[in-house]
Image (cartoon, rainbow, N blue to C red; front, side, top):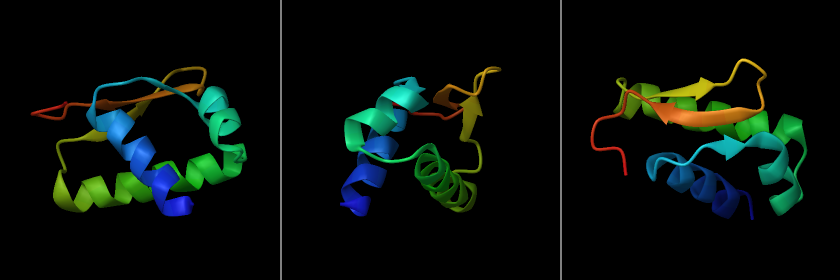
Length: 73
């Protein structure tokens, strides 16, 4: 289950979607803390494989998107 959720999150980022943390958590039945861990795992992966890509967080901390990534989606 975890792998599918992380891959879905990663795919949404790569497809250029803006992810609403609360909606994503409700959709997959995970806590905000779990969401943060998954985002951190993806960020670590991107640092090693695509350092130009970063996960941008809205000022309110409720929306996330992939930024500065060439060939995004």
